[in-house]
Length: 495
Image (cartoon, rainbow, N blue to C red; front, side):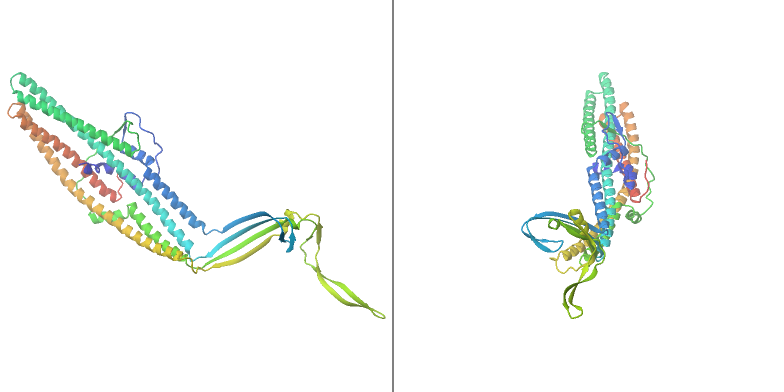
């Protein structure tokens, strides 16, 4: 019974399913005593406090980070480093590439940059892969919200049915108490035997038990609804019974037509298709990781050494001048002859008394640019294994997409058959109530006139109340089944 009833009020949440609650409600307060909430308020509260929705939201954020990171791989890679240290003993003086002995302090700094030029289109395919994954994560979040809404609606309708069943039980109890009081007076007047009074008294007690049972069912269903809303059990909460009329019993489209529309509407189908596309680009990205990689590189560095402190000649940067030094001569009888000369470059500049770290860091700057080509040859088959795993993941994604499509088709087919059966059941229940109501009316008149006994009267009364309960169940069941089909077709449903 509850399995059937839990679907009945789901149609009320269809607007939220279609739009997936793009904006979260701001209110998340516990209802005050005596508060009566409708389905929308329950759904809003559940979406704010649902741990499943929160977890799915974090998955979306992770997917967004992966997508942004994949795009950032197109940017240059820039790294800086600095070093400072002490050394003792024989060490190299970097300024003049001579050796010295003693304590020496040194420092260096460098800045390196690298820009990928070609890597088998791995980065481009990774961007496409994570873009589709991010979109799929958003659709998964929408699906999670739909699941939360469905669960809340299921619990909500259970409360509604338990409330109506309680009202029916109270109505039956009131009727039996009325007949019991009437029978007591007739027995006291000697118009009826004592057994009629006792039978009616037993029926009143039975109906009181039914009322207690319905009350317990209502309390339990309210507790489950509070737990789904993450409310304390002590919170005072009541739900509103919606006023809904039965619509046209005719189903305007076939199950295949509804399924074709559902494939374009349901977020789980779109998500599964996006994951297949993402896995396709994942395979191409993994294959690109096995291709050669070409990068443009650039770097700049400088250094300081304490062994270079002291008097130093600092060139002004101008080109050197070739000069010749005479190293010997011969005197003849009349003239002086140069025996040989030595050439050298003379530079212009200045001498400084102190050549500290600032001057050294400034003068020792060096810069390089170049190209770097990396050809993967053997890396423990990591790249090839990653490519094989990507191929398997693509096949799994394709199987998942087929399974999701099959599940949706089965759901549509089941909902369609249920809607057809629910329409027939509602018609039968409606005729049954009309017949039972007339039969009870006639039996009641005969019983009050003393033309029939208590047993016939009680059977007629019980049959009528059971028929009314069946009609309520059939009414909501049909409405829900038809609205589920509308939901699969993406129709705007609002009540």
